[in-house]
Amino acid sequence: MWIYRERLSYFEKLRRSLYEILRDALEIRLMKISLIDSFYKFLENGVEYVFLEKSELKPGSKKMEKESELYNTFIVIFCEGTISPELKNYIRFFPENKVVKKNLQYLAELPLHKNFSHNLRYFDKPDFLDFLESLLNVDYALLIQQDPSVKRRNRYALTHMHVKIDWPIADAAEDLAKWLRYVQNSIYERGDEEARILQNKLFEYYGCHHSVGGRRTAGLIAAQLLRKQDFISTVYVSSSESRTLVKYSERGVSKFFLIKLTDQQIRDLAKRESMNTDDLKSGYLYTAGSNHVGIAEAVYTHTPFSTPPTDGKLRRCNPAYNWLKLRDEFLHPKDAARHARPLSYSWVYTPE
Image 1: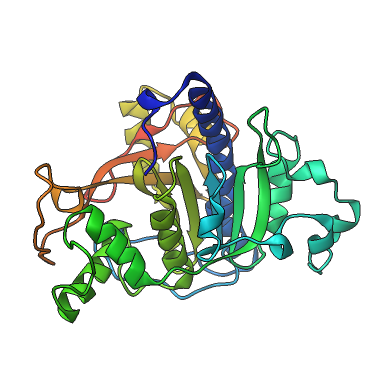
Image 2 (image 1 turned 180 degrees about the horizontal axis):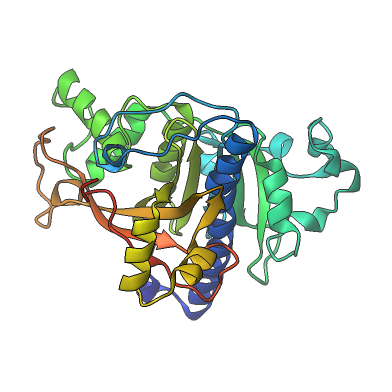
C-alpha cells in the first residue's frame, strides 16, 4: 500500500513532488489526445460524435457506445517508483517489450525508430510527450516509471510498451475484498454467489459496470494490482465505448469527457465567473462550426461500504449499497491556457 506524504523522507517528498508535476503535464496531453483530437477526427471524417448522456456518468451506468477506430484509445501506466519484478507475471514487462531501438524496429507504423535516441524515452527531454504520443497506438499499455538504472537522481522514463495486464479478475476482487474486510481468506469462502457479487463490486469500485470491455477491465485490474506497491501510481484509460478518459490514482476515480455548451450556458457560466464570453471561449472551449465543446471532469469518492471498516471486523456485502458516488465536477481550461484554473461546473445531475 502506498505511503502518505507525511510519512515520507525528505528525498521521497522531493520525488513525489516531481512525480506530481510530471503527471500534470502528462494528463494535459492525454486529455487532448483522448478527447479533443478524437472529436476533430470524427468531424474531419464526417461522422457524428456522440456526446455522453448524463446517465452514463452516474455510478452503476451500463450504457456504452460502439467502438470506433476514429477514437484514440490507450492505456498509460505512470508509477512514482519502479515496479517490483515480483509483479512481472501480472504486469508483463520484459526485455522483449522494453522501449529500445531493437524493439522499435518491429513497429512498421513508427518510422521514428531509425533515428531513435535512447534519451528520447526520458520524461525530462523536450520531445518526450511527442514520442509517447507516437506509441499510443501500440496495443496494450505503455509503462512510465522511475528508471531503475539511474541510482543517484529521480528520472522517469517510458520503459516498456505493449504491456499486458494479466491478473485474474477473481484474484483482484479477492485482494480488494480482503482489504475491505468482506472476506477473511478466499473470495469463495461464503459461496459462489457472494464471490460473483464481490467481482461485480470490483468493477463498481473503479467506476465501471461489470460488463465493460477489455481495455477498461485491464486498466482497473492494473490499478488494483499497483496498490500493492509502496509508491503511488496512476492509470489512464482512454475508451471508445465510453468516450471518456478514466484516471485511477491515489485520489480515487475521475472521468474526463466532452460536453457541448449552448450560447445560453456559456453566457450563464461567464456571468457566474465574472468573465466575458470571449475570454471564456478562448480559455476553456474548443469551437467546431457554431458549436463549443469543453473538457469536463467528474470526480468520484468511495462510500463507507467501499472503505475499510473502522473496527476492522468482517462484514457482509450487500449488493444494493453503492460503493461510489459523485464528489465534484470541473470544466478544464484548454491546454494552452496555463494561467486558468478549472471551473466548478455541475452537469451530471442538473436537469436538461
